[in-house]
Image (cartoon, rainbow, N blue to C red; front, side):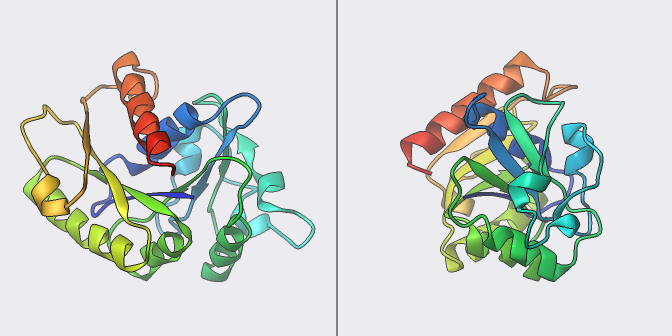
Length: 208
């Protein structure tokens, strides 16, 4: 499983999660993007689905994949929303996805608190998402440290709204950076979509 994490809210994590999910998915093997942010559950808005049913509706007889729905904003992606979910419900949902048969992308809360630790513990690798500002990168460095401590090491940094003038490699100690340009509709922009494919290619080469 892949975690999409960052230090600041509003840096574009959810959009990157959906874009990467689309790039990794196929019509036969659809990606699953899971919202794990109970405080700001906004995956449903970006994906173009209703907030319910979601994680809160998973039962012993209703698996997470059965509750997930097709995203309308992107292709080849199912989404599992987080509206009204308890901590225990999120833990249970993630735990039932530990051996996925398709790409699973965890859209993490911002920061480096307990809610972020939950999906990071389940993830195999982490993609760090940040704005190209000192404060955003500094906060993301704390998230990166947590990811390493929880055995979900960062494999890639994505700078959103970047003109390539900032190099975060020293601060974040991440092997590769992809710069996503500032566009008005990032899930519809060909320029942004090309970057999501580039991210997916890097992840595939690193066997994540």
